[in-house]
Image (cartoon, rainbow, N blue to C red):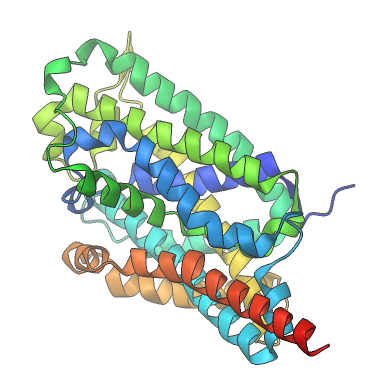
Length: 362
């Protein structure tokens, strides 16, 4: 029987797909300021390129056999490096989970339950995320496969039921702001995927090729982004550009025969996505925390990590302007760059230098 702490490559990237797509579902208009409408339909091309380039440090750390972790290398350097890196990655996991919770609360309070007090709901979601994380990575992977199937059905439904309202005239020409802007957009899109850094600690727990799975994930998710934005723009046009949550505006238009307004059911699927993302970050955060504190992964560790997540949520809850300012400040991009590029590259280079010095002295 497979260990509950391990998954197949397919299950792992299903978890990543589900975790990442909730950021697309709760894509807000303040984010769109950096995304010219015409570029969104072709963003998958530079998204794949940026994703490959940004993952190079991670793949260097994992090695050819993909059986190492970042901490395999830091332990060769010094215990202090291991603890320092683990602390930073723990903070990154907490930040990513908190951003997800805030985005979801802003969405729910804006379009589903306007002006409702949703703090108890977020607390309940965190409690459910703790329970899911405690079940282990393999059950989480199985759950993600089912959620991903629901996502595929819901997106196909939305696309099919709004196809009649698609107008080519609503689409804008790409590259009106130049290639540089498109490349910047692609990096921003990749930088919302902090989950990619989890490969640095989970790779030995993944059965199958991480590299092949990652390339397939990049292609599929990139194409999904472009397809969703193309449909949104083609159907809603200028009206959609004025909406805070553009994909939700599209789901409201979905209807087939006597079946109308299934947006509430679709939103229930988005709740599952948020739960998956929260649980995944709590699970991985506990693995990081174990490297820098006397805490073993388990329910107590997940509860401990959920506290700062909830604290950050309270800081930004209901304050969309403040939250938007944080997003525009480049905080997400900075966290992503440090976790996925800076630290892995620095650790890999330092370990290589130390190894060569040791060989030269031998």
